[in-house]
Amino acid sequence: MGRYLLRRLLLLVPVLLGVSVVVFLVLHLSPGDPAEIMLGSQASQADVARLRADLGLDEPLPLQYARWMAHVLQGDLGRSIRMRQPVLGEVLIRFRATLILTTTALFLSTVCGIALGVLSAARPRSLVDRLSTLGSIFGASMPSFWLGLVLMVCFSLWLGWLPASGMYGAHGTGGLADLLSHLALPAVTLAAASTTIIARLTRSTMLDILRQDFVRTARAKGLVERGVVLRHALRNALIPTVTVVGVQAGYLLGGAILTETVFAWPGVGTLMIQGILARDFPLVQGCVLVIALGFVLFNLAVDLLYAFLDPRIRYE
Amino acid sequence: MRPPRVLRRIPRNQLALAAGLVMAAAVLAALLAPYLPLLDPDAVDTPNRLRPPGSPGHLLGTDEFGRDMLARLVWGGRISLLAGFATASVSMLVGGLLGVHAGYWGGRVDTVVMRLTDILMAFPYILLAIAIVAGLGPGLANAMVAIAIVGFPLYTRLARGLVLSLREREFVEAARALGSSDRSILRRHLLPHLLAPVVVAWSLDVGAKILATAGLSFLGLGTQPPTADWGSMLATARTFVILRPHVALLPGLAIFVVVLSLNILGDALQDFLDPRLRHG
Picture 1 (tube, chains in turn brown, red):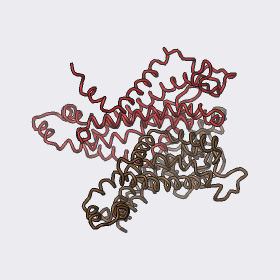
Picture 2: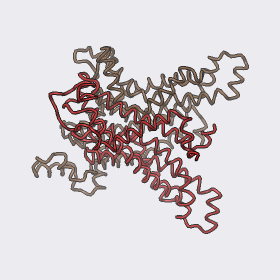
Picture 3: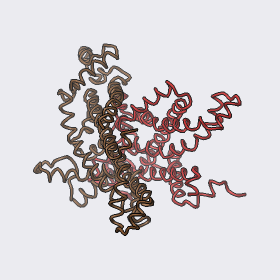
């Protein structure tokens, strides 16, 4: 396992370098002068020149990249132009909110997806199976930001059960109950599409496994069907499911940007959008870098978990 | 005269037929928008703002500026559909060509192309699109460029994988032994085999691209006001959703129905083009 871990960590280096190049280029893709774009057309030449010097825009591109990387490796993502504060501190505060949303959505989609998949596979063509299939078709076609608005209209406006936006209520306690009530709608919105994907994969894997000889043997031994499905089939079906759960974890980080905007969730996604609209490039770079790093690390964690569950992978 | 095989199969899949009709209606409405008896989609009429569906003169009501929702949905559909079809097509062409080259010639071309796709796929799809728009600046054209860029690795990987398996097959060996040039082998022998899977992927991808464009517009990074597309309509409606839910529900429903129809059609096309699924 140690050698596998080392190999995976080494493979991560070129990916992270590539990610950093792309994030760096975000600032330099602009057709015009980034300093002028950031400061707007009203800025004086002196201000533009000062910002150009601050950002090192006069230097050759490879040198700018090397300088930027050196700062990033020391934890310095620059200063936000809009907030006049170090980017890293603000991004990390917001990333905590994004992680709360993403991990809750991942938990919901994993539990509901596996449960739906197992129920569908155990009773193919039943009502649950048909509803689950219908849900997977709908889930792939429904814009998450629209689903969020629909849920907001139903549960906040019409029923008045849950708050419509934010992470804590203005007059709330700021405790766990307050957080959970605010988290419910964004987490369900974000989890919806992933739930259908996990359910579909679990169903097809379970159907394959339920036809195999060892399952027939377990039934022939007289085991109750519940034990066959849960103890024999599900354990084997979990390996491919873990892979798709991991992939979904990464995509939930990206999808959170839209969900956060719908529910005014104070995560790194809303911070990034504010940064883009204010042309605050250091802030945008910091947000993109942190989310991309989270995505890469999520994928690494899944690869390691996969290797832990299936020893064959470690020896390939 | 018997109808063509494609048409004879359609009645068996009534869901696909319904999806086809929905798409035909959406595309026709988008194409014929200038000739349809619709109100000006950008005409502001503040005394009649936020009218509910069924109001006199406004079948689907009005938005926060009193603009006719039906007209804006139809005109917005032009942009959303164009963005979906155009970005998916550009991704397919660029990604497909890169994949074919990487798979057929291998070596350094393959290494460079595949590392590029690895890096692009190391980002969540929407994050990379947002990052590119951040650099290029908000706007529909830039959003479409961003979505086309983040979409091409899918086709590159698909085309490369197919070419890698096809180039070792006997019929390619035979063509090479008979003296066919690489160009001729690619055009006459490999491309026809690539067409079906790539077209299926494209048909499923158009819906994803419509969702992505709408997502960027929803974030304020795509279509800019007063021009309407379904995503930007949803974005502005967000503020008024508590007062009048229809302003947010209608554009979302339009996206949902069109993308659902495209996904059903894509699945049906896959079943049709894959003989194993057809007879399975």
